[in-house]
Length: 131
Image (cartoon, rainbow, N blue to C red; front, side, top):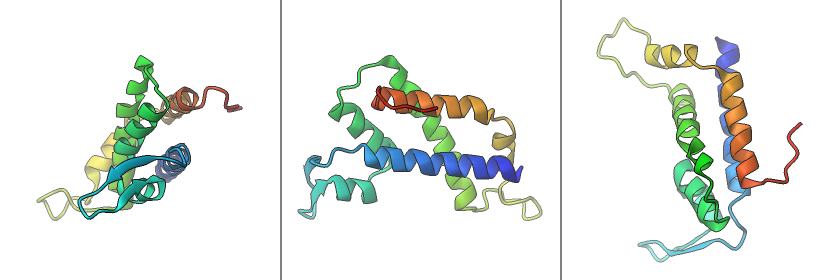
């Protein structure tokens, strides 16, 4: 089980790094309510993974229907967050604080999910070598 948790955590860290790296250096989404420019650095630190992935989709004009891989990767990212930021979701004090997390993790085929991650990478950077 610990191996699966580690694999999921590392895969999602790699996804975050990849997404941040692929936000264009000249990215500018205007100013926020406080007048701060929403540039690459701002986005890396303050936007959700989903917002960042959408910004990449728009900046690279990705129209491939497979970009819906984003929803599966978001599920994995949320599960990773549940483990990293372990909080009790149960009103039953005797139950492990993350039984639901373990149940969701047990049902995963991380090899399949890693292939989905690689599909996403290839959509964003078609020329990348992944072997």
